[in-house]
Length: 59
Picture (tube, rainbow, N blue to C red):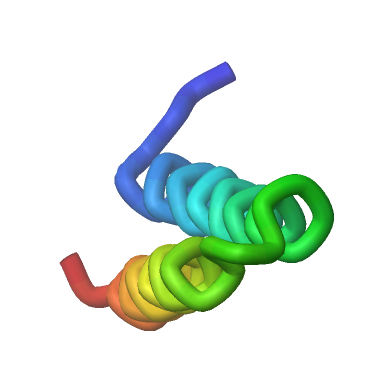
């Protein structure tokens, strides 16, 4: 299995999207009093995953 730059960036974007979803769900389900902070952090992870996905073919 050869990992080139594009595959690595794709995997990183996928992992970051999963972590963003986990942060949002933890905030909503387990710590509702801190849901705003967890949601902002999760949206930040989504934004970084989107940027990595957009840069995938250009670096």
